[in-house]
Amino acid sequence: MRLVLVLAHGSEGDRSRMIMASMVVVVMPMGRVIMASMVMTCVRLIKRALRRMFVYRVTHG
Image (tube, rainbow, N blue to C red; front, top):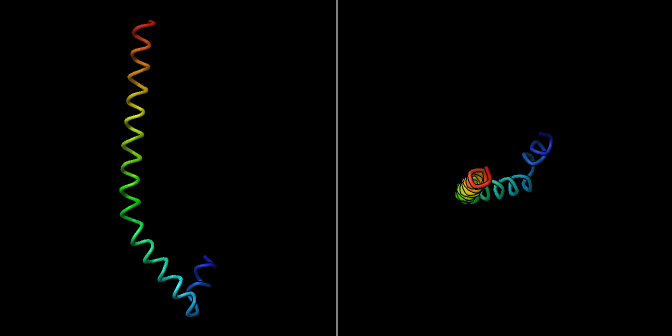
């Protein structure tokens, strides 16, 4: 919180805050897409692992 207060005062703080805001605006949609793709890959890996475990249990049951 103190860092935010320090950034809030002075022209340098305003400039850096503007840069941060623009970076957030640029990164947020990309981050959403990256998160979605990561979730999809995690789901795919989990499904594959579960299927492999199921097949292993059936064949070695």
